[in-house]
Length: 435
Image (tube, rainbow, N blue to C red; front, side, top):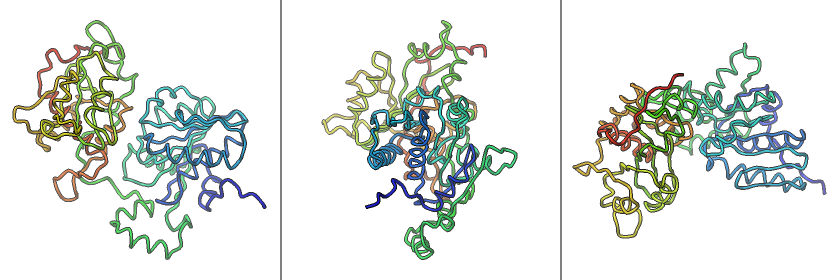
């Protein structure tokens, strides 16, 4: 019996990858099989070119690990050769010396891979990734070997900070000969029949705008009702190198000055997820340099994680004020009591009420407009909240269906409390270092 190939590409997948250039923007509709095509393409490239190195990149570990690991394992087993795999590193070593691994912007392995030299990279769900990550992380990884990139996703909004949209603009610019763009909407891809398309449109109950974006692959415009309208990734998202423009009174710069700084934590109580954003005060600025996001968790686990990362430091926590009565621990104690027992200083408002939503939003936008808050690029959940939180259509009500809602709350608590408190004794005295 003749053995079936490990992967049989659909028409659009074959067409897209046959016509790629060094940097290719591929836009495809929901359900087209984007992730499957990228992982299989990387597998084939590694098989055909010995001693090469390739990466599959996504925003978050959880987003990409399951599909990447499962499909790569399937392909390795189908081919039958001896592959080495490391699930912790999400890396596959091929018999011919080639390597394929996964990169996640949300994980610590991103920093350790900055100096890597790649022959090629496939960036999935690029509409969720900032264009600055292309300029500062991905492109430098390709320069040494003159590597290629496939940037793929489904339109989200018309946003110049969005990697997919900026790649689209580059692909449409004929003067950039290394760049190209190919778009496969639900009709062009040939994945479904016209009858299936019409049935899906009726059954999905999507708005016209959603259908135009996700299935007709149109960039229909900016999201309405953006909450943090003053947020600009090119200003407020910073790297390790950009942190080094600050120094303390002893002349210490990042990361040494962090050993001296008081840790400030904004925390939202919720079983899934527990969310916290972590920063330090630098004069009148707040730098959010870490975040914690734990699914199906409780206050004990959050406290343990904070101690693991920052034990021995002075830690101020600005929590959800309802934690005096709400319990996420099932241990008979309030969340605030649990945090105090771990040695944290818990800051509460006299009224025991959370700051009013609209007042805190105005305060945060004011801090953004004055460049008083910065976020390290590793904090993708925090950045996601700043970028995507919106009001419900036609209202001033925050959309609580956004996946970053709980990190949004943690951000509000942290910035509202640290801005209103006296900074005496709770911040690092710093001055600007010479650039």
